[in-house]
Length: 474
Image: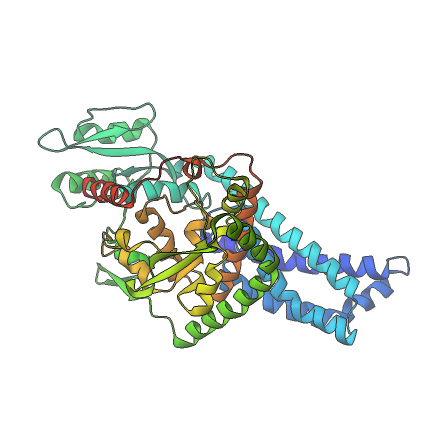
């Protein structure tokens, strides 16, 4: 199924359900016992609202990628995006209904709830249908040639996108122990020692129709021969660009008489968007501080009573690698036997609330790459340094996907650069809602994650050294 057809289909289903939800809302408010003519007259009275809501939803759908597939199927992400979009869609009509009584408040509130639930259901149904169809299409079976981080990341992304015409059945791994080079198969069942001449036989046995090449140096003679042989048997071949710099660039394929060129456009946000982000940070930080101030004051009193010092500044690197003091509550997050109040503060991430002051000072943003210590930043690669192009954040895309301080910088950088490239105010609102979901899920869990409960803290230098060694091996 073509992706654009799928996305247009979801949008058309949304617009159709919008009319149905409005009809149900009008029926709940005015009843249906007075006859069809009375219902039609009420529905016509809301025609201007329906037209405006449809136009606004088309805009939000494109701006926020509300199809439910971009970024991979992640229910908290889809839910938070729809909450933000429906809230923005209805804020003006509800305000008019409450102030001018132009529309029925009950009808609009019913419409809001019904439309939101229907939009969630449409995306769930679309994913189920696409997943079932994808599993039964033999033409989608593919293998990935490669064994590095790009190959692993590619496989994980394909698994999150059932709408894509790929079903990974295994990997082809270069066998570096033999000369000349050969290919070793890593399929189901696992096979080893496969010579290059037998690769096509292996792929035919597994009914593979597509090969994705994700290797650092795909131009070797053996790889070229494999590509030529695959094309002879009408097998599709895909090449993955190996430049990690593409993460912070919009890539566009340009062809000149059969010669493909990859055009890269660097991330360069307009000044107005930076002003808007800063304004959003200030307004929302003040609002959150007012909301949680009683809880923060109570936590501060408890911490002061036991440690005589409420806040603990920690050195971190922000935008441009400039160091600053990031504030936390003075609680040991990796204590062997923490007190009950310390355990609760860490579990619910209340220790991070003082960083709202960093946001108001301009050191940080509400959403962005999480800042890391100067010792870890010192070992950044040029690719990882790209996450320093924007203000550090209290939360970010990596955090809502489960990555925390103990995870590697390379893993977090992949999410951070995706956030930088696709930033918008609406994305920030969505990520803030996803952060609330993440905190609730972690706080209500009965067990502390092993990394949080570990009695011994891994030294940053040791972790960075492991990352560098892993990157060199890859």
